[in-house]
Image (cartoon, rainbow, N blue to C red; front, side, top):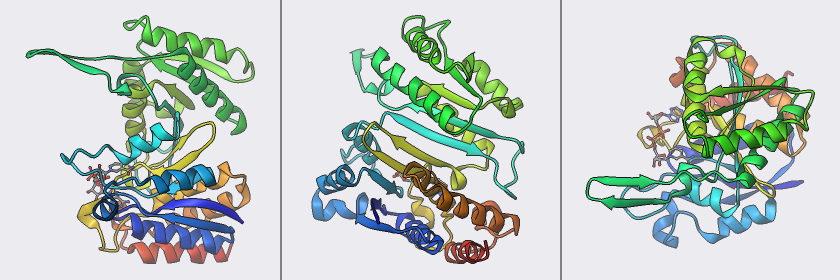
Amino acid sequence: MTRITLINGDGIGPEISDAVVKIIEAAGVKIDWDIQSAGADVIEKEGTPLPERVINSIKANKVALKAPVTTPIGKGFRSVNVQLRKSLDLYANLRPCKNLPNVKTKFDNVDIVVVRENTEDLYAGIERQVDENTAESIKVITRKASERICKFAFDYAEKNNRNEVCVVTKANIMKLSDGLFLDCYRKVSQSYPQIKKREILVDNLCMQLVQNPSQFDVLVLPNLYGDIVSDLCAGLIGGLGVAQGANIGSDYAVFEPVHGSAPDIKGRNKANPMALLLSAVEMLKYIGENMFAAKIEKALYKTLSQGKCTCDLGGNLTTEKFRDAIIENLSIL
Ligand code: NAI
């Protein structure tokens, strides 16, 4: 039995985690969940939204499924997500964006995987106030981080039978920093002769994405462009309720939906568990449970094709009823 850390989060986190755990159990996957609470609910008792025990659990189990947690505003707490990424060196942010049955969007042929560098760039947090009217943020790009993210993107493409890896920069303007990222891509790409290469500037990419997204396959980007473009791509397939994600490093991986803890709908049995479920499907693939991953994906697609979904997607099912509909479809596959 595989032991996996489950951070069930706060806000809608516990509701959607409960649904996803029940669906995984119903599919027949044997997982020993190491449940770790984190976020707003543990601050009072433990003094921090991310107690050391959570990090230790992931270090021991290597893999975690994480529901969203609230980052308290203005109380001096660092984001749990940023802390997790830093302490576990989760350098790759992976966001597959693919159309889903019956989820109405502008395009019906989107199948893009965004691979975002997760540790540096303008997110390195190096800022200074030069004087009252001037502030500076430093964009850090290193060969080590750029080569490993490009290698990650090509390895992902190879393993998942993708045809092309396109690098996204603004190297025409930031000749040194983005230029270095591009240079690393070109160097790494030479080891993957069977995968098509493509280079594009980030502004042109955004325009092309909203006009003709089906031309793109795997995208690899530095941190800031990756953050923005991955949200754009989430919008192409139906938005927050369906957008899955993963943070992956050399030793550990944390799978989590893109959305937050949605305090406005907490406890109302109306949250969509799909983004967490799809993140869990990606997690199952990561641990080699491909057959179960495919089975759950198929049951979810069938449920959506039957017009069954939660109200954020125009349906009328509660979280629990949507969960049960997926479980019912699992039993007849
Ligand atoms: P949010 O993603 O929680 O909510 C934005 C809107 O989308 C809300 O109207 C919400 O009801 C809706 N929504 C989100 N997920 C949904 C779902 N699964 N089903 C149906 N509707 C859904 O973003 P917001 O309000 O900006 O952030 C709330 C808290 O979450 C903040 O404290 C923020 O820091 C935290 N957050 C945590 C993340 C994480 O743990 N990975 C990621 C993003 C935000």
